[in-house]
Length: 85
Figure 1 (spheres, rainbow, N blue to C red):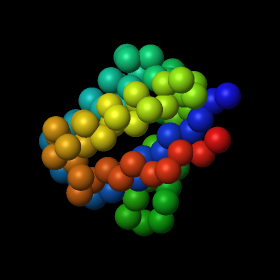
Figure 2: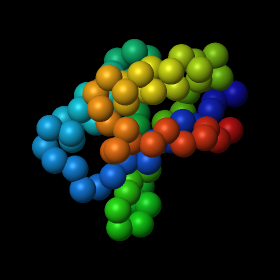
Figure 3: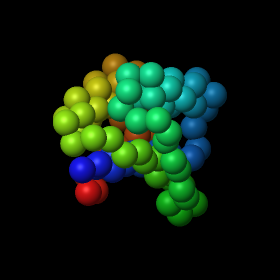
């Protein structure tokens, strides 16, 4: 059964940080966690980016995202939200 993974991302980010966010999104697709990443507004300061993945890949995807947040210094920009599903 598919599970939805959600990321809360700040709207007000510089170009370098935006490139890191785009790189993360591209890597999630390239690694086969999902085919598409959706986004919606979450008030004036944030977006919610979300995608569905198979249950078997949830832990691996969340670990990859958490690692990228730390490695790319995105902890002030991206918050990994609890999954839905």
